[in-house]
Image 1 (cartoon, rainbow, N blue to C red):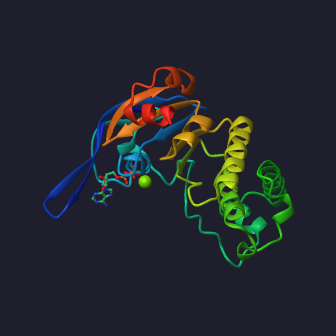
Image 2 (image 1 turned 90 degrees about the vertical axis):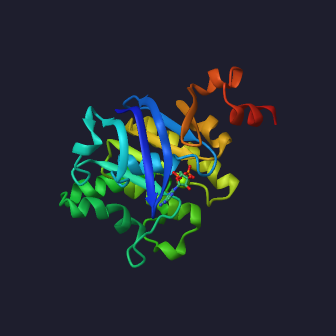
Length: 238
Ligand code: ADP
Ligand code: MG
């Protein structure tokens, strides 16, 4: 689904150049829940933005479904992106917020209704469908944002620390919901976080980034026994 080979990404400010990703090579299989973990500044957001073609200076190969990002038309790709600040339409109900992307693509009313109720059941939002965003908690708003992102059954969902503004208990529930969505929809998920606990509990496979370089890629079970990364070692010892 995603294949990077010696991929680099840069920022150019005035005369200074920052290498945010430094010749990374990895791949994500279709249907995988792949977690990218690393400290602040390690290049996680840059990786997601590169896939969305939002980084102008790149080098090496980055392919999605065999197509180079240079040739991707983001408008026609069925990708979803969610970060920690979901912005809902304040004057629309939860139902209308979730339905919106389908209305834009002129999906028939019955189909919209069926899909909204289906995702609302998975995300435990059925009882909130008639509320307005300001009548929701932060965790509930984030759930609505995720439901809205999933309503078109994206081929790829990019999540940039989507739960980091939430309380620990709510975060724990969100992980369970995300795993449930993933099991039902088999969507390929690229999930970015600085939280190692979150990474270990969510990932099918995970990759540790440090200073724009890959420290290690592996299955959580395998990395617990053999971390091959300072970040993981420190975390697992604590
Ligand atoms: P993360 O999401 O892991 O916190 P980022 O991908 O946002 O990391 O940033 C990676 C590196 O790129 C950091 O060194 C950061 O300072 C730098 N960076 C990010 N955005 C910009 C920008 N717009 N201009 C210059 N440097 C940037
Ligand atoms: Mg970031």
